[in-house]
Structure formats: C-alpha cells, structure tokens
Length: 191
Image 1: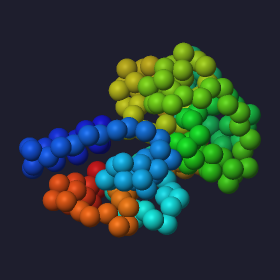
Image 2: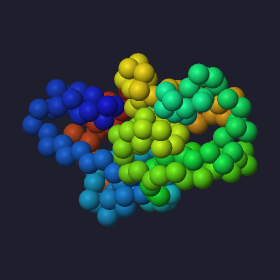
Image 3: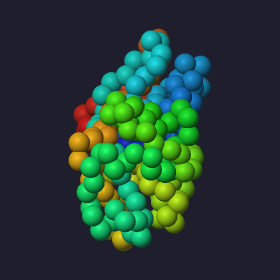
C-alpha cells in the first residue's frame, strides 16, 4: 500500500518516468541492488551488505493476529509467556518480517514452532483466518480484515515487534532525476 502511494505520487511528478516495481523478500531485494538489477529498494529490518546505503523511511508495527475462533480472540491481550510453543504461520527464510519476529522471540527466550511457511501476507492472513495458526504481521496489512472481524489483533504484554523500513541503494549508484525524486518523496513524507 505504501509503495503504491509513492509510485502514484512519483508518476504525478514525472509522468514519463519508467517505474517497474517488484515485490520480493529482503534478501532477494538486497541481491538485486548489489547486482544492479534494481536501482532502489524499500527494505525492512537490517541491511546485511556494507555496499548498500540505507536511509530511514518509516516505522511499522507488527502485531499478533489470530482467528476469531481462537481462545485469545476474546481475551484481547496475553502475557509473552503464553506464546511458548504456539504454532506460528511465518514468512519464508530471508523475509525481513520473519527476521524481526524471530529475533524478538529469541531475545525474550520464547520457544515457538512453525505451523506453516507462507511467502506473502495474503496467504498468511488466510491461514490465520482459517485457524491454522497465529501470526505476527504488519498492522498496516490487516486493518481491513480486523475491521471486518476476519482476524483479531492480540496485544502481547512485554513484547514489541517494531521494524524500520529503509530506502536502500548501492553506495556507487548514479542517481537519475527520477531516483532523486523517489528518495525525496520517501524521506520527506515519512509515511
């Protein structure tokens, strides 16, 4: 949703600009930037290569969600210890979302298990709604499903799953006018 708004604003500024968005996990986007297959990337979490430059763009909160039939749906809030050994629907290896989730769980010494691995938010939401597990996902991506009662947010006392998005480019990248405009939009708007 954020990327679409940025592209729309950029096309209004520069209608002739060729923009080819591609959605992929963080490790793939990093590889594309390093091999010059992509000019810019919007990445969550840590950047792993010293050849990439990252500028802060926005903060996003990841939240715990469950199906309306899950016992936690009525509670609305749980203690962090209650997450122990729960079955999570998680993103694939290389996903920034999974990296943030796993690092928070590890830092708090909370063991967890995988109930399913999904490579996109839609299938994650569908699996949780079907009662196949619980998930930690961007709050921005589940607003509609929460409003419609298809998914239920659960507050976890003592845990925070925040992540930071960055606009990333190769340190030796030449900036075209369009790239500068995109960077400016990202850094000025700070969605």
